[in-house]
Amino acid sequence: MAAPKNKHQTGQLPLQDMLNQKALSIVHLEEYYSELSEVPHQHDAYVLIFVQETKGGSNLIDFREFAMQAGRIFFMRPGQAHQRQSKQERGMLVSFSEKFLQTTGLSAHDVLVMFGAVYQHPYLDLPEKLQHTVEQLAQLMEQELAAPEPDQAILSRYLYILLKYLVQECHLAISKLTPARHSERLFRLSTLVEQHYREHRSIAFYADALDITPKHLNTLCRQYLQKTVSDMQHERLLLESKRLLYFSSLSVKEIAYQLGFEDASYFVRFFKRLTGTTPQLLRKGGSESTIHADENPVT
Image 1 (cartoon, rainbow, N blue to C red):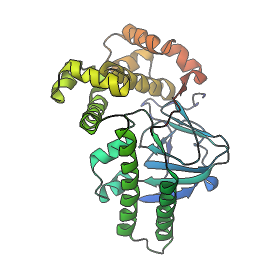
Image 2: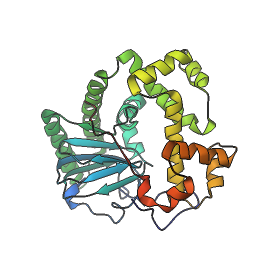
Image 3: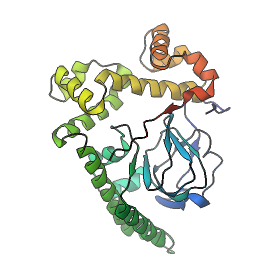
Image 4: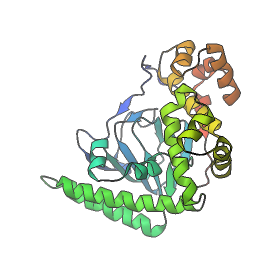
């Protein structure tokens, strides 16, 4: 994946307008085209990509590649790095704003379960019955959107029902990996890491916030996420460093300071240890940025 030519001092990716000043939008994959789709970009909305048929395309989400398999639905939140390599997919893009999501009354935890990718899979492979349900609800929303004056309350309820079905499926998938008493704590940990990763907090900070011992917290992470708390922080720092290297004109020293490293040379050593290359070399060689994800679905 080559780095785009236009970089921004702020490190922001090009923004793909999914809503066109609407609160909710549904577009068929086979009919959708944007010049930004095949280059790294970010969205201005939450996006569900439901794949009905495909000839082998892929989604790159935050520099990780996932196959566009039939029956698979992807969850993307605003601001994530995205690039779609299309191979004549048939399916649907369901996009909605943060403000419209709030009208559904869906809990913040449910949103995190779907869009947080705590278990490293920003997608679900849906059973056939649920695929039909998703299609039917999307069609009902399309029908309402086609009305001269779409009823926002009806659309909000349709979206709520769709997301609740997907949350239920997420919980079923997660329950096969983690007992409920632990999954809640791991989701809270993920939120804390997202809030504090630039501060390079110790495991004791997270353990105290979760009312658990550091040893027990790391044991849970290793058992159910196959990583430590430190690994989670490092992965988040690495993701942000890649975003800034590819999509900003900040120097390596400036990126290091922005990510909480007091010494730029330490940042370079940290980056090389995790990637096998230096920030400077990664910035020059675009194809190095793609990290291929484990294709085993969370089911």
